[in-house]
Image: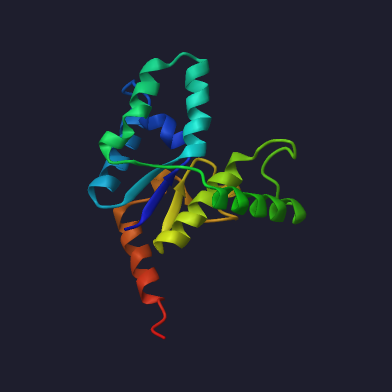
Amino acid sequence: MPIVVLDSYPLSLISHPGNTEESLRCSKKIQSFVNNRILVVVPEIIDYELRRKLIHSKRDKSIEILNKLGDKGLVYAPITTEIMQKAADLWGWARSTGQSTANKDKIDIDVILAAQSLILAQETREYTVIVTSNVSDLERYTPAKKLEDITIEYFTEMNRRNTSSVSLL
């Protein structure tokens, strides 16, 4: 089962209580992934990133929607020590190769998100992609795409490629 890992922008769209065209389109697409047996994951670090902003701006309805995403088939993925250690590795590698994604004193949520995606792929042996509006910063670590660039057929093709490249040793 392929895995979609949500970044903060698509997560904010599907937690939006309004019926904007963009939020409806995003919600519909995410639900189609779930309906087609594609695991959609809400990483703990991304929940934190969005939730703190929603709390600060007193967006109670959005928080309520965020709290109920599990009812729609999305899965919450907690941060583990292994993820944080992988994130530190990614951060150090990016810094040492001049590819930093955030100020040196910031936590750099992108590397934690990328680490979670990498660990999920490693643990499940499934194709995993981060859905984001920030493709360039994330794709240096792991597959990342904009929501509009991902279809059910995209996952079918990725699954076919992964299956055909498995060694039969």
